[in-house]
Image (cartoon, rainbow, N blue to C red; front, side):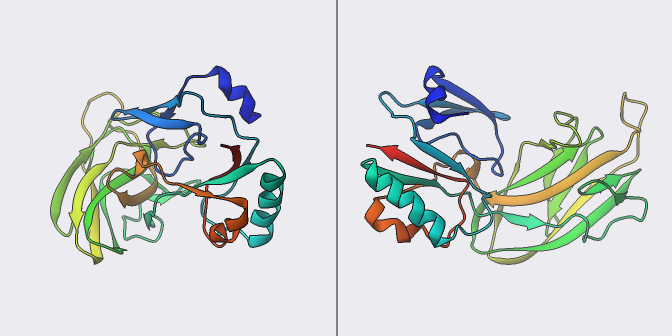
Length: 239
């Protein structure tokens, strides 16, 4: 969608998900609930001249930033880049898990009860949010270093191509390695409880990362400051 087309939309509603790209720079976060966020268009905010989507994981190369800077300079505009939050990924396929939990399209298909455990490390101390992606009905119970965090269940909001990002559990961690445990109990006669479940991803993000506005602004003359970093997108914006 051309950036100018968004002028007709004062609000954008997104799923709460730190792995997803935030809306364009003309929008700021005005509300956040358990599952959704509402972004409002700032009064008088100009539409981007160009919006270039990036991977969010691979560092952007200088020649590409330089070309955007040249275009921004001819338009009397500046560069705005959206930085993704620092995520800590926990591999579910390389974790210890029951043999009955088989490989799925992305992660694991949890057939029956069992326990998964894996090690991970965080770079700094503080509050972290633990996120799961997948499709589960029967609750799973999570703990870190033997400390129970809580349970997550009845989460069927996505599909095999767009996994459900579930509401996170908050945990305070010291820097360095930790052990994550996920336990799925036996089934009952409740509707849907006896079926298998899908666990695609487990990751941690600094607390509140799904609502942080991580925008970097650079004048065309300072475009080299944007090189070598990962971004969800870069825009050319006037003003």
